[in-house]
Length: 164
Image (cartoon, rainbow, N blue to C red):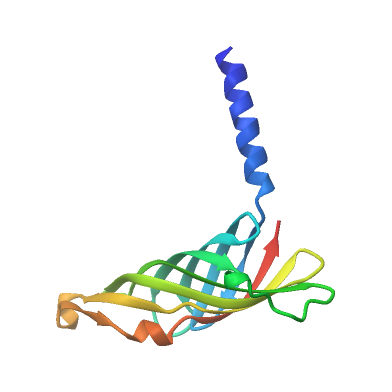
């Protein structure tokens, strides 16, 4: 009986997960990023992004935002064969960079963007993912904690995602 109940719960959970629109892809900006989007209905999504710098050193960073799709009921007016959407969201961010004397950062993240969903399962997007928060330096770099304003100018990316 327990096995049947477990199988039924797993079947319902997998159907519920399958019913949600999802997308996975890559973003290119100040670094190379990989993103996963999980939709919650027609108007909300969770965006998880991990990025690494393309040039100039070692590092890894991540952002998680909860986004509203076409907020305030404002849609993009030129929908023809595919669909245009815009979105905005808030969340958190963190990462580490530098090899010998690593620095770290943590803070609040925003997410603003516009995307085009083709009539086949492909999506193109232009995003801005600003971050504001604190940054910490290794003792070799002077040590201490400071305020990170440079994250406001970082995070403009071009994205390509496969929708499934």
